[in-house]
Image 1 (cartoon, rainbow, N blue to C red):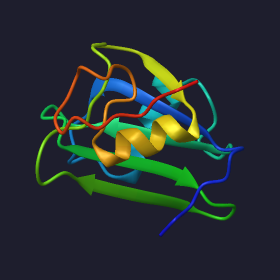
Image 2 (cartoon, helix red, strand yellow):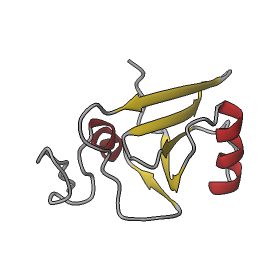
Image 3 (cartoon, one colour):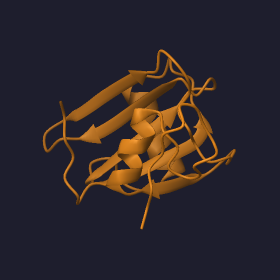
Image 4 (cartoon, rainbow, N blue to C red):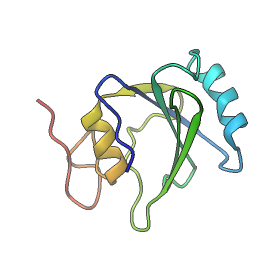
Length: 117
């Protein structure tokens, strides 16, 4: 399992991404959407239209790692934003990747959610 330390910034794009895009297509999205260099200490998350799949791109000192996750049951719980981007903390990332809501305890099934203090 790949673990990210607390210094990694996590950015989520809310624009629906065509998952036929590969590494180079996602790199061009990063530059246009986030306005940062992809080789920085960032993890970039993209979702498909069904909200059942996530692709993540991360620079690991000497190359990019492309991660893909598909939920078999349920959907990833994103805030109701159609466009733009947000930055997540580590706990919010864990919630999102687990299929739990990191925004509102009312939003999703299963009825597990992350609580922030």
